[in-house]
Length: 101
Image (cartoon, rainbow, N blue to C red; front, side, top):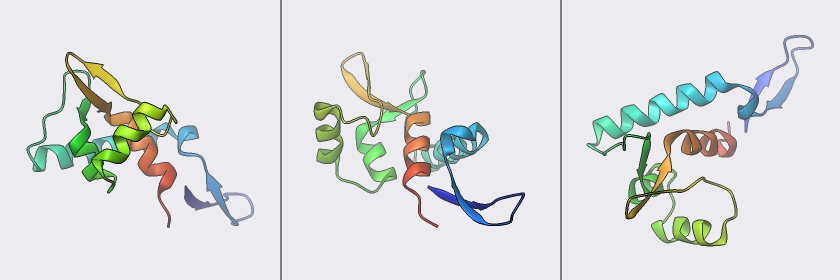
């Protein structure tokens, strides 16, 4: 969760990234740029392979398999043909929610 100054009292407070769609869009664009720089395929429906999603959020691939099978809701998973992908928007939300500043 990111911290910002309140415009009224100038006090620090947490903001929910879901309430700020421009933050999610900016983070999603950074993820797309990272994918292009590292030759990672982005699917036609704006998703990336689990292996690269794990690299982006600095966790093990097995952890993503566990999250998917347990259905704990940290990330959204989609099946595309015979493979599982993570939507970039879902990754952006997760990164913003877990970020510490």
